[in-house]
Length: 425
Image (cartoon, rainbow, N blue to C red; front, side, top):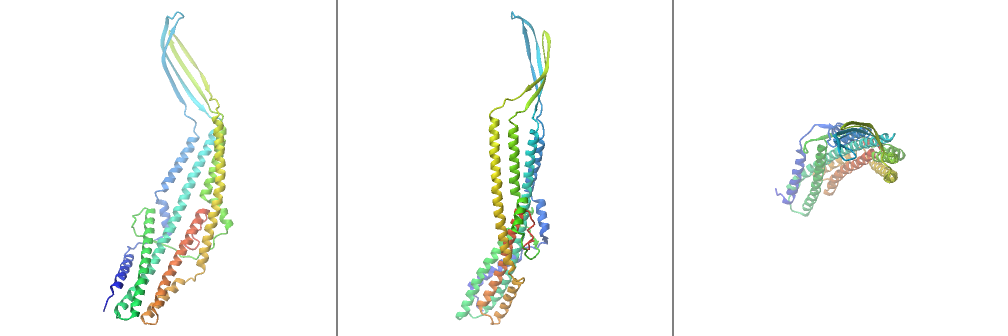
């Protein structure tokens, strides 16, 4: 039997790669919902947003507190002289006073309202990050599942080519037809090896990121259970837009910021009238005679043009916030409609497929393999059916992944539960 080195080397490389894919350690399947819940419970970056909420709530308590009173102590010497300049007495002089600053009614309430808006913004930030984290986990889980399916299909076809290799190697190398068929198999083997490598790399990338999200070693084995379902139609555009205006995190944040700027304008107007301080005091001096003084002092800062400038600046920021809300609404509408159109297109594409389309291609590829060995199928038909089988698997999984990405984007844009519209878990 004569072996062709040009055929053996690439096929050995393919067998080695598929062997590595088979050698991945097995792991108990994890339901997707359990995986997402585990990530949301343990992901360390969530602590950043939770700490932000704690800090904002502390700011509410600080904003509602009055200024601390100030205690002042004076200590010195007192000398008394007569009109002739003769020292009449000398002794210690000291005094004590307590100063309390009071705000005009309503100012503390405005500051508390501003601080409460910061709490709401921090809570929106946490909710937005949790939604994005869950969406990313779902996308990665599907990518891992899709890479596994592609790898399985590639391994299936690789096994057929490996078995076919023995047939070619057993033939006599003489003649043009065996040589050309050998070159066809070599070319297909190279393309097959590229597909196997791409599937392995995609699976590894999804696995590493998922393990990082759930706080596990990057190379820890993971198998996610993905429930199959039929695609469904998304709600109408008007319903999606209404839900987005109500639930979208970024748009809600812009509205909260607009409301916050309204409080800033009110506070700036209010602060034109400065606070006042009340200072009860007591002092005593001994210089021959004992002298005592006590009373109450009142201090009030004089108004300056800076108060009017602060109000003008606050109004300008409020106008900017109004424009930001309008711009955010337009961008939100465009993003929702674009994602909805993408999802509808992918669902329509999936609905045109026969439910068992992939299985039919798999059976046809297996049938072609059997009949090619019997000489009833030409090499071109054999290769075309193997490639068509792999193309069908990739097209199905890629379209499902694209539909899932559009559904998850709609989920984050609208707040609706669109991640289960049939393409994904």
